[in-house]
Amino acid sequence: MRIRRSLRPLVSAERKPRGECSDAGSASTLRAGGRLLVLRLVSYALLFVSGVVVSRSLGPAGRATYALPLNFAQIMAVITALSLDSSTAAMVARGEASVPTICRFLAASALALGTAGLIVTTALGDALSHALLAGASPTLVLLAALSVPLSLGVQFASTPLVLVGALRAFGWALVAGAASQLAFIVTARILLGSLTPAVALIGMGLGLLVSLCGLAATLGRRFGPLRLRPRFAPGITKRAFRGGFAVQPSTLFIFLNLRVDLLIVGVLTTRRQAGFYSLSTTLASIVFLAASQLAIGAMARQTHAPLDEANRYTRRFIAQSTIMTAAAASIAAALAWPFVYLAFGRVWTPSVLPLVILMFAAVSFAAEGPARTMLIRMERTRLVTGAAFAGLIVNVACNLLFIPPWGIVGAALASLVSYTLYTAVLLASFLRAGASPPVPA
Image (cartoon, rainbow, N blue to C red; front, side, top):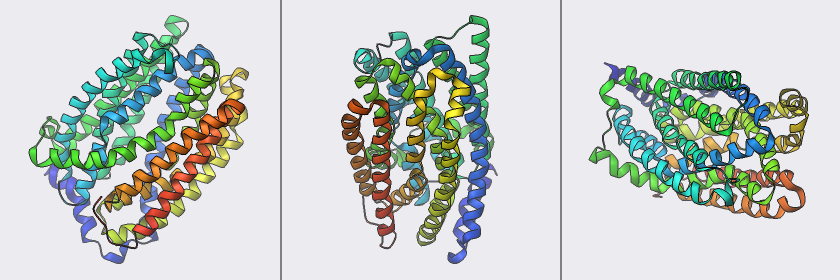
Protein backbone atom coordinates (compact mmCIF):
# COMPACT_ATOMS: atom_id res chain seq x y z
CA MET A 1 0.00 0.00 0.00
CA ARG A 2 2.82 2.42 0.77
CA ILE A 3 4.46 1.68 -2.57
CA ARG A 4 1.18 2.19 -4.40
CA ARG A 5 0.68 5.56 -2.73
CA SER A 6 4.25 6.60 -3.54
CA LEU A 7 3.79 5.78 -7.22
CA ARG A 8 0.50 7.66 -7.53
CA PRO A 9 2.17 10.90 -8.71
CA LEU A 10 3.87 8.98 -11.52
CA VAL A 11 0.65 7.29 -12.66
CA SER A 12 -1.45 10.43 -12.47
CA ALA A 13 1.12 12.40 -14.46
CA GLU A 14 1.08 9.79 -17.22
CA ARG A 15 -2.73 9.88 -17.47
CA LYS A 16 -2.98 13.63 -17.98
CA PRO A 17 -4.02 14.78 -21.45
CA ARG A 18 -1.22 16.17 -23.55
CA GLY A 19 -2.60 19.66 -23.59
CA GLU A 20 -3.12 19.89 -19.89
CA CYS A 21 0.22 21.53 -19.12
CA SER A 22 -1.23 25.00 -18.86
CA ASP A 23 -0.41 28.13 -16.97
CA ALA A 24 -2.48 26.67 -14.12
CA GLY A 25 -0.12 23.67 -14.05
CA SER A 26 2.97 25.81 -13.84
CA ALA A 27 1.26 28.02 -11.26
CA SER A 28 0.49 24.98 -9.07
CA THR A 29 4.10 23.84 -9.33
CA LEU A 30 5.31 27.31 -8.44
CA ARG A 31 3.06 27.15 -5.37
CA ALA A 32 4.60 23.79 -4.41
CA GLY A 33 8.07 25.18 -4.99
CA GLY A 34 7.02 28.31 -3.11
CA ARG A 35 6.02 26.27 -0.06
CA LEU A 36 9.38 24.55 -0.14
CA LEU A 37 11.03 27.93 -0.58
CA VAL A 38 9.33 29.17 2.60
CA LEU A 39 10.73 26.22 4.54
CA ARG A 40 14.14 26.71 2.96
CA LEU A 41 14.01 30.38 3.91
CA VAL A 42 13.23 29.38 7.49
CA SER A 43 16.21 27.03 7.50
CA TYR A 44 18.33 29.70 5.85
CA ALA A 45 17.28 32.21 8.51
CA LEU A 46 18.33 29.79 11.24
CA LEU A 47 21.64 29.15 9.48
CA PHE A 48 22.07 32.88 9.02
CA VAL A 49 21.80 33.47 12.76
CA SER A 50 24.37 30.71 13.24
CA GLY A 51 26.58 32.47 10.69
CA VAL A 52 26.25 35.79 12.50
CA VAL A 53 27.32 34.22 15.79
CA VAL A 54 30.22 32.39 14.13
CA SER A 55 31.39 35.39 12.09
CA ARG A 56 31.26 37.84 14.98
CA SER A 57 33.18 35.42 17.17
CA LEU A 58 35.83 34.36 14.63
CA GLY A 59 36.38 37.62 12.71
CA PRO A 60 37.36 37.73 9.01
CA ALA A 61 40.62 35.78 9.33
CA GLY A 62 39.10 33.15 11.61
CA ARG A 63 36.12 32.74 9.29
CA ALA A 64 38.50 32.03 6.41
CA THR A 65 40.11 29.24 8.47
CA TYR A 66 36.62 27.75 8.88
CA ALA A 67 35.20 28.45 5.40
CA LEU A 68 38.09 27.35 3.17
CA PRO A 69 38.31 23.73 4.46
CA LEU A 70 34.52 23.49 4.34
CA ASN A 71 34.43 24.80 0.77
CA PHE A 72 37.05 22.21 -0.20
CA ALA A 73 35.04 19.42 1.46
CA GLN A 74 31.89 20.48 -0.37
CA ILE A 75 33.74 20.28 -3.69
CA MET A 76 34.95 16.80 -2.76
CA ALA A 77 31.38 15.79 -1.86
CA VAL A 78 30.21 16.69 -5.36
CA ILE A 79 33.10 14.74 -6.89
CA THR A 80 32.33 11.72 -4.70
CA ALA A 81 28.57 11.72 -5.37
CA LEU A 82 29.15 10.82 -9.06
CA SER A 83 25.82 12.46 -9.96
CA LEU A 84 23.93 9.34 -8.90
CA ASP A 85 20.96 11.44 -7.78
CA SER A 86 20.59 12.82 -11.31
CA SER A 87 21.09 9.45 -13.01
CA THR A 88 18.52 7.67 -10.84
CA ALA A 89 16.02 10.48 -11.37
CA ALA A 90 16.52 10.11 -15.13
CA MET A 91 15.97 6.34 -14.83
CA VAL A 92 12.64 6.97 -13.11
CA ALA A 93 11.66 9.45 -15.82
CA ARG A 94 12.44 6.91 -18.56
CA GLY A 95 10.53 4.14 -16.78
CA GLU A 96 13.67 2.09 -16.11
CA ALA A 97 13.15 2.05 -12.32
CA SER A 98 10.55 3.04 -9.76
CA VAL A 99 11.13 5.50 -6.95
CA PRO A 100 11.00 2.86 -4.18
CA THR A 101 13.49 0.71 -6.10
CA ILE A 102 16.18 3.38 -6.21
CA CYS A 103 16.00 3.97 -2.45
CA ARG A 104 18.10 0.93 -1.53
CA PHE A 105 20.63 1.66 -4.25
CA LEU A 106 21.05 5.26 -3.08
CA ALA A 107 21.42 4.10 0.55
CA ALA A 108 24.23 1.72 -0.44
CA SER A 109 25.85 4.42 -2.57
CA ALA A 110 25.76 6.93 0.28
CA LEU A 111 27.56 4.50 2.59
CA ALA A 112 30.21 3.36 0.11
CA LEU A 113 30.95 6.67 -1.58
CA GLY A 114 30.66 8.64 1.65
CA THR A 115 33.30 6.51 3.33
CA ALA A 116 35.63 6.81 0.34
CA GLY A 117 35.04 10.56 0.18
CA LEU A 118 35.89 10.98 3.85
CA ILE A 119 39.22 9.20 3.44
CA VAL A 120 40.23 10.99 0.23
CA THR A 121 39.17 14.43 1.46
CA THR A 122 41.15 14.05 4.68
CA ALA A 123 44.29 12.94 2.84
CA LEU A 124 44.13 15.65 0.16
CA GLY A 125 43.16 18.33 2.65
CA ASP A 126 46.18 17.62 4.81
CA ALA A 127 48.47 17.65 1.76
CA LEU A 128 47.04 20.92 0.35
CA SER A 129 46.38 22.71 3.63
CA HIS A 130 49.03 25.42 3.28
CA ALA A 131 48.50 25.90 -0.46
CA LEU A 132 44.69 26.16 -0.53
CA LEU A 133 43.18 26.05 2.96
CA ALA A 134 44.90 28.89 4.83
CA GLY A 135 47.04 26.44 6.80
CA ALA A 136 44.10 24.58 8.35
CA SER A 137 45.14 22.04 11.00
CA PRO A 138 44.61 18.28 10.51
CA THR A 139 41.74 18.46 13.02
CA LEU A 140 39.93 21.13 11.01
CA VAL A 141 40.50 19.19 7.80
CA LEU A 142 39.03 16.04 9.39
CA LEU A 143 36.00 17.88 10.76
CA ALA A 144 35.35 19.43 7.37
CA ALA A 145 35.83 16.03 5.68
CA LEU A 146 33.13 14.51 7.89
CA SER A 147 30.63 16.68 6.03
CA VAL A 148 31.26 14.62 2.87
CA PRO A 149 29.42 11.42 3.93
CA LEU A 150 26.75 13.46 5.71
CA SER A 151 26.17 15.65 2.67
CA LEU A 152 25.92 12.59 0.41
CA GLY A 153 23.40 11.05 2.78
CA VAL A 154 21.22 14.16 2.73
CA GLN A 155 21.53 14.50 -1.05
CA PHE A 156 20.68 10.88 -1.83
CA ALA A 157 17.87 10.70 0.74
CA SER A 158 16.31 13.85 -0.73
CA THR A 159 16.12 12.48 -4.28
CA PRO A 160 13.23 10.01 -3.83
CA LEU A 161 11.21 12.55 -1.84
CA VAL A 162 11.64 15.23 -4.50
CA LEU A 163 10.68 12.80 -7.27
CA VAL A 164 7.33 11.99 -5.63
CA GLY A 165 6.69 15.62 -4.76
CA ALA A 166 7.12 15.22 -0.98
CA LEU A 167 8.60 18.70 -0.76
CA ARG A 168 7.15 19.58 2.61
CA ALA A 169 8.82 16.66 4.39
CA PHE A 170 12.06 17.51 2.62
CA GLY A 171 11.83 21.12 3.74
CA TRP A 172 11.01 20.29 7.36
CA ALA A 173 14.02 17.97 7.60
CA LEU A 174 16.26 20.84 6.53
CA VAL A 175 14.62 23.16 9.07
CA ALA A 176 15.26 20.62 11.85
CA GLY A 177 18.92 20.39 10.88
CA ALA A 178 19.35 24.16 10.80
CA ALA A 179 17.65 24.54 14.18
CA SER A 180 19.95 21.92 15.69
CA GLN A 181 23.02 23.66 14.33
CA LEU A 182 21.89 27.01 15.72
CA ALA A 183 21.11 25.53 19.14
CA PHE A 184 24.58 23.94 19.29
CA ILE A 185 26.38 27.12 18.19
CA VAL A 186 24.53 29.36 20.66
CA THR A 187 25.00 26.90 23.52
CA ALA A 188 28.73 26.57 22.75
CA ARG A 189 29.07 30.34 22.59
CA ILE A 190 27.46 30.73 26.00
CA LEU A 191 29.37 27.92 27.67
CA LEU A 192 32.79 28.54 26.10
CA GLY A 193 32.67 32.34 25.91
CA SER A 194 33.92 32.28 22.31
CA LEU A 195 33.90 29.99 19.31
CA THR A 196 36.67 28.33 17.35
CA PRO A 197 36.63 27.10 13.74
CA ALA A 198 36.52 23.52 15.07
CA VAL A 199 33.38 24.18 17.13
CA ALA A 200 31.74 25.85 14.12
CA LEU A 201 32.46 22.79 11.96
CA ILE A 202 31.08 20.44 14.61
CA GLY A 203 27.85 22.45 14.67
CA MET A 204 27.57 22.24 10.90
CA GLY A 205 28.07 18.46 11.01
CA LEU A 206 25.41 18.09 13.68
CA GLY A 207 22.92 19.98 11.52
CA LEU A 208 23.59 17.68 8.55
CA LEU A 209 23.18 14.61 10.76
CA VAL A 210 19.80 15.76 12.09
CA SER A 211 18.56 16.52 8.56
CA LEU A 212 19.70 13.09 7.40
CA CYS A 213 17.86 11.38 10.25
CA GLY A 214 14.68 13.31 9.43
CA LEU A 215 14.86 12.41 5.75
CA ALA A 216 15.53 8.74 6.55
CA ALA A 217 12.54 8.63 8.90
CA THR A 218 10.31 10.13 6.20
CA LEU A 219 11.52 7.62 3.62
CA GLY A 220 10.87 4.78 6.06
CA ARG A 221 7.30 5.93 6.66
CA ARG A 222 6.56 6.50 2.98
CA PHE A 223 8.18 3.45 1.37
CA GLY A 224 8.68 1.06 4.28
CA PRO A 225 11.80 0.34 6.37
CA LEU A 226 12.98 -2.38 3.98
CA ARG A 227 13.54 0.23 1.28
CA LEU A 228 16.25 1.81 3.43
CA ARG A 229 18.39 -1.33 3.60
CA PRO A 230 21.50 -0.69 1.45
CA ARG A 231 21.75 -2.89 -1.63
CA PHE A 232 23.48 -2.64 -5.00
CA ALA A 233 20.91 -4.41 -7.20
CA PRO A 234 22.51 -5.63 -10.46
CA GLY A 235 19.65 -4.32 -12.58
CA ILE A 236 19.99 -0.81 -11.17
CA THR A 237 23.66 -0.39 -10.33
CA LYS A 238 25.23 -0.61 -13.77
CA ARG A 239 22.74 1.74 -15.43
CA ALA A 240 22.84 4.21 -12.54
CA PHE A 241 26.63 4.45 -12.52
CA ARG A 242 26.79 4.65 -16.31
CA GLY A 243 24.27 7.47 -16.29
CA GLY A 244 26.07 9.16 -13.40
CA PHE A 245 29.41 9.05 -15.19
CA ALA A 246 27.76 10.66 -18.23
CA VAL A 247 26.34 13.52 -16.15
CA GLN A 248 29.21 13.89 -13.65
CA PRO A 249 31.47 16.15 -15.76
CA SER A 250 28.72 18.73 -16.15
CA THR A 251 27.74 18.48 -12.48
CA LEU A 252 31.33 18.97 -11.38
CA PHE A 253 31.96 21.86 -13.79
CA ILE A 254 28.78 23.60 -12.63
CA PHE A 255 29.69 23.27 -8.95
CA LEU A 256 33.28 24.34 -9.51
CA ASN A 257 31.96 27.36 -11.37
CA LEU A 258 30.15 28.29 -8.15
CA ARG A 259 33.00 27.50 -5.73
CA VAL A 260 36.32 27.91 -7.50
CA ASP A 261 36.36 31.67 -6.93
CA LEU A 262 36.72 31.24 -3.16
CA LEU A 263 39.62 28.84 -3.65
CA ILE A 264 41.38 31.33 -5.95
CA VAL A 265 40.68 34.20 -3.56
CA GLY A 266 42.28 32.14 -0.79
CA VAL A 267 45.42 31.70 -2.91
CA LEU A 268 45.73 35.22 -4.38
CA THR A 269 44.65 37.38 -1.45
CA THR A 270 45.06 37.50 2.32
CA ARG A 271 43.22 35.33 4.81
CA ARG A 272 41.24 38.39 5.89
CA GLN A 273 40.08 39.10 2.33
CA ALA A 274 39.13 35.44 1.94
CA GLY A 275 37.02 35.79 5.08
CA PHE A 276 35.21 38.81 3.63
CA TYR A 277 34.54 37.01 0.35
CA SER A 278 33.32 33.85 2.09
CA LEU A 279 30.66 35.96 3.80
CA SER A 280 29.66 37.51 0.45
CA THR A 281 29.21 34.09 -1.15
CA THR A 282 27.26 32.79 1.85
CA LEU A 283 24.84 35.70 1.91
CA ALA A 284 24.41 35.68 -1.88
CA SER A 285 23.23 32.10 -1.60
CA ILE A 286 19.77 33.38 -0.64
CA VAL A 287 19.22 34.25 -4.31
CA PHE A 288 20.64 30.90 -5.41
CA LEU A 289 18.28 29.37 -2.85
CA ALA A 290 15.26 31.10 -4.35
CA ALA A 291 16.18 29.94 -7.85
CA SER A 292 17.01 26.35 -6.90
CA GLN A 293 13.97 25.75 -4.72
CA LEU A 294 11.61 27.04 -7.38
CA ALA A 295 13.35 24.67 -9.81
CA ILE A 296 12.91 21.73 -7.42
CA GLY A 297 9.19 22.47 -7.37
CA ALA A 298 9.12 21.92 -11.14
CA MET A 299 11.19 18.74 -11.15
CA ALA A 300 8.35 16.24 -10.63
CA ARG A 301 6.35 17.59 -13.56
CA GLN A 302 9.44 17.87 -15.77
CA THR A 303 10.30 14.27 -14.94
CA HIS A 304 6.91 12.59 -15.37
CA ALA A 305 5.01 14.58 -18.00
CA PRO A 306 5.24 13.62 -21.71
CA LEU A 307 8.31 15.18 -23.29
CA ASP A 308 6.66 17.80 -25.48
CA GLU A 309 4.38 18.83 -22.63
CA ALA A 310 7.35 19.07 -20.24
CA ASN A 311 9.25 21.26 -22.71
CA ARG A 312 6.35 23.69 -23.05
CA TYR A 313 5.88 23.78 -19.33
CA THR A 314 9.60 24.40 -18.72
CA ARG A 315 9.66 27.43 -21.04
CA ARG A 316 6.78 29.04 -19.14
CA PHE A 317 8.29 28.13 -15.81
CA ILE A 318 11.67 29.67 -16.67
CA ALA A 319 10.04 32.99 -17.55
CA GLN A 320 8.01 33.08 -14.33
CA SER A 321 10.78 31.96 -11.99
CA THR A 322 13.32 34.38 -13.52
CA ILE A 323 11.01 37.32 -12.81
CA MET A 324 10.52 36.18 -9.23
CA THR A 325 14.25 35.62 -8.66
CA ALA A 326 15.20 38.99 -10.17
CA ALA A 327 12.73 40.71 -7.86
CA ALA A 328 14.21 38.91 -4.84
CA ALA A 329 17.75 39.89 -5.91
CA SER A 330 16.79 43.54 -6.33
CA ILE A 331 15.24 43.75 -2.88
CA ALA A 332 18.16 41.91 -1.26
CA ALA A 333 20.74 44.12 -3.00
CA ALA A 334 19.00 47.28 -1.82
CA LEU A 335 19.16 46.05 1.78
CA ALA A 336 22.68 44.61 1.60
CA TRP A 337 24.73 47.43 3.17
CA PRO A 338 22.52 48.19 6.20
CA PHE A 339 21.93 44.48 6.66
CA VAL A 340 25.63 43.59 6.83
CA TYR A 341 26.44 46.64 8.94
CA LEU A 342 23.75 45.95 11.54
CA ALA A 343 23.99 42.16 11.65
CA PHE A 344 27.75 41.61 11.41
CA GLY A 345 29.28 44.94 12.30
CA ARG A 346 31.28 47.63 10.53
CA VAL A 347 34.32 45.41 10.14
CA TRP A 348 32.42 43.24 7.61
CA THR A 349 31.27 46.03 5.26
CA PRO A 350 33.98 45.22 2.63
CA SER A 351 31.80 42.18 1.87
CA VAL A 352 28.89 44.31 0.61
CA LEU A 353 29.92 45.21 -2.95
CA PRO A 354 30.93 41.64 -3.88
CA LEU A 355 27.67 40.49 -2.28
CA VAL A 356 25.54 42.76 -4.46
CA ILE A 357 27.34 41.64 -7.62
CA LEU A 358 26.94 37.96 -6.70
CA MET A 359 23.23 38.41 -6.02
CA PHE A 360 22.58 39.65 -9.54
CA ALA A 361 24.89 36.97 -10.94
CA ALA A 362 22.70 34.36 -9.25
CA VAL A 363 19.54 35.45 -11.11
CA SER A 364 20.67 33.52 -14.18
CA PHE A 365 20.29 30.27 -12.26
CA ALA A 366 16.51 30.64 -12.32
CA ALA A 367 16.79 29.48 -15.94
CA GLU A 368 19.78 27.18 -15.49
CA GLY A 369 18.18 24.51 -13.28
CA PRO A 370 14.99 23.84 -15.30
CA ALA A 371 16.86 23.95 -18.64
CA ARG A 372 19.53 21.54 -17.40
CA THR A 373 16.91 19.11 -16.07
CA MET A 374 15.22 18.91 -19.46
CA LEU A 375 18.49 18.53 -21.38
CA ILE A 376 19.43 15.62 -19.12
CA ARG A 377 16.01 14.05 -19.64
CA MET A 378 16.43 14.39 -23.42
CA GLU A 379 19.86 12.73 -23.06
CA ARG A 380 21.69 15.85 -24.26
CA THR A 381 24.28 15.66 -21.50
CA ARG A 382 27.08 16.68 -23.84
CA LEU A 383 25.42 20.05 -24.32
CA VAL A 384 25.25 20.55 -20.55
CA THR A 385 28.86 19.47 -20.14
CA GLY A 386 30.08 21.80 -22.87
CA ALA A 387 28.24 24.80 -21.47
CA ALA A 388 29.41 24.09 -17.91
CA PHE A 389 33.02 23.59 -19.00
CA ALA A 390 32.99 26.87 -20.94
CA GLY A 391 31.58 28.68 -17.92
CA LEU A 392 34.23 27.21 -15.62
CA ILE A 393 37.12 28.13 -17.93
CA VAL A 394 35.82 31.69 -18.23
CA ASN A 395 35.40 31.87 -14.45
CA VAL A 396 38.97 30.78 -13.73
CA ALA A 397 40.42 33.05 -16.41
CA CYS A 398 38.45 36.08 -15.24
CA ASN A 399 39.39 35.44 -11.61
CA LEU A 400 43.07 35.31 -12.51
CA LEU A 401 42.69 38.55 -14.49
CA PHE A 402 40.36 40.47 -12.17
CA ILE A 403 41.54 39.57 -8.66
CA PRO A 404 45.06 41.11 -8.82
CA PRO A 405 43.80 44.63 -9.67
CA TRP A 406 40.38 44.57 -7.98
CA GLY A 407 40.59 41.97 -5.22
CA ILE A 408 37.37 40.29 -4.09
CA VAL A 409 35.26 42.68 -6.21
CA GLY A 410 37.08 41.24 -9.23
CA ALA A 411 36.20 37.71 -8.06
CA ALA A 412 32.51 38.65 -7.92
CA LEU A 413 32.68 40.21 -11.41
CA ALA A 414 34.29 37.02 -12.72
CA SER A 415 31.33 35.05 -11.37
CA LEU A 416 28.86 37.46 -12.98
CA VAL A 417 30.49 37.00 -16.38
CA SER A 418 30.82 33.22 -16.16
CA TYR A 419 27.34 32.54 -14.74
CA THR A 420 25.71 34.65 -17.43
CA LEU A 421 27.66 33.01 -20.24
CA TYR A 422 27.00 29.50 -18.95
CA THR A 423 23.26 30.02 -18.54
CA ALA A 424 22.90 31.72 -21.93
CA VAL A 425 24.58 28.80 -23.70
CA LEU A 426 22.55 26.27 -21.72
CA LEU A 427 19.24 28.02 -22.39
CA ALA A 428 19.96 28.29 -26.11
CA SER A 429 20.81 24.58 -26.16
CA PHE A 430 17.54 23.69 -24.42
CA LEU A 431 15.44 25.78 -26.82
CA ARG A 432 17.10 24.11 -29.81
CA ALA A 433 16.95 20.60 -28.35
CA GLY A 434 13.29 20.97 -27.42
CA ALA A 435 12.39 21.32 -31.09
CA SER A 436 14.07 18.03 -32.13
CA PRO A 437 13.93 14.40 -30.91
CA PRO A 438 16.43 13.23 -28.25
CA VAL A 439 19.73 11.69 -29.29
CA PRO A 440 22.09 9.48 -27.29
CA ALA A 441 24.50 11.33 -24.99
